[in-house]
Length: 205
Image (cartoon, rainbow, N blue to C red; front, side, top):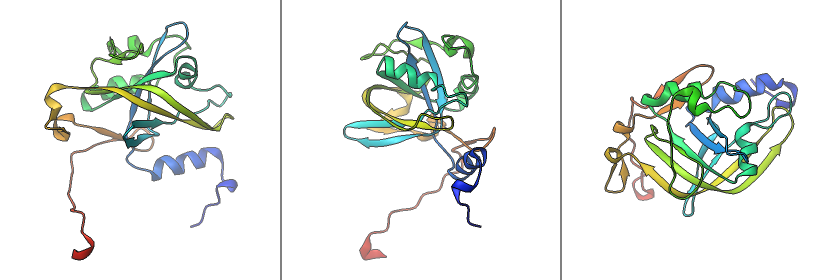
């Protein structure tokens, strides 16, 4: 089957993307607006860019009525944010933060999670998150500001909070982290069925 994207609906394009690119990591992003009001929202269009300088990217969208997501607008006003990593222990709270609340109402309170002070920026992290990356805005690349569009927001990491039991000799203990990923619809996955493949050097191929 060949699908020409200009011949299918926005909804079908959306379902094609989220049903094909699996599993997706989840950025649980905390921001603050110009008035100091907190926002916390999950995004599964998220990944690492490079380790030096340590840079992450997530992609908020545009609502059907043309409004940018609150996280996007907040970062334009206050150019810093925290990418909190969710896991099995915080999955339900993260999911609550996907509820669309009136602008200015805090998802921290709605989801029952604790804002904790950051080390280098004014935006708080989620105290319950096993890992949190404090970021300052590097750049925003707007793909489209029309309904269904979005942007790539790049953050330069300033500081990382890691739960003590997760970090040993420069490595994260994935089994203790118990990460989750986003699938299509209401589905999520656990990283419990792991297999390993050694990279094969050219001379061994």
